[in-house]
Length: 256
Image (cartoon, one colour):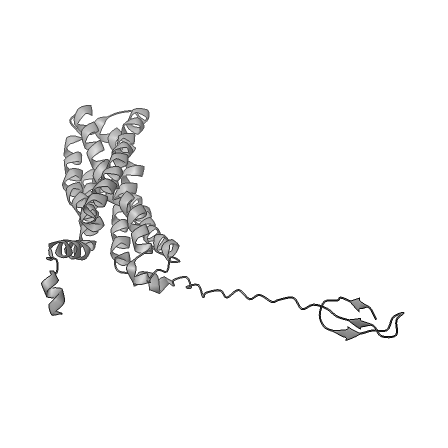
């Protein structure tokens, strides 16, 4: 008798020896139990996250103002300051320089205070009168124009930068998701996509209103800033109320 090892089962086969038993060792089977992963959040589920709708609408109006400046500022400087196209284009880049500084300041302040909506609201509140001041001062030479461009860029682009970055990340990992991290892309897409509507509407409205004078364009921009501010009022109130609520003492905890 000889022993032959095969895979599968114990069999008997005929060979040169009259009694040949084929024995195959059984291999241990391993099963890896995979925990059920949470499914990606739906579109309606992302909208139900607290703050997504408010910040999306706020970004719509903030992008409306930002992209109107992006496309129409060189022409406005050419008409009001009587500069050629090259100098007007170079001067208009100061608006973006101010936006860089404003975005950094908005991030630092919101991290220090822990209040995203309040930081955006304060900058939007200051941006509206600054836009009006820019429309008045831009006719008085380079110095005031440069200063107002930097200030306007910081106040307009600060909330825009904060919402598209830190706010989107916060909402995509909101505590209501209960640890489900598969919502960040959907939330970011909703917020930024809604803002893109404003980016398309702003230059279009500016082109239609500029026929009646540049004052009409600036009134539209200031209105958009106030609407962006109104969208955040509920969140601002919630942030300020939560910060003023007194901490629960140990005695109160024992009583409960």
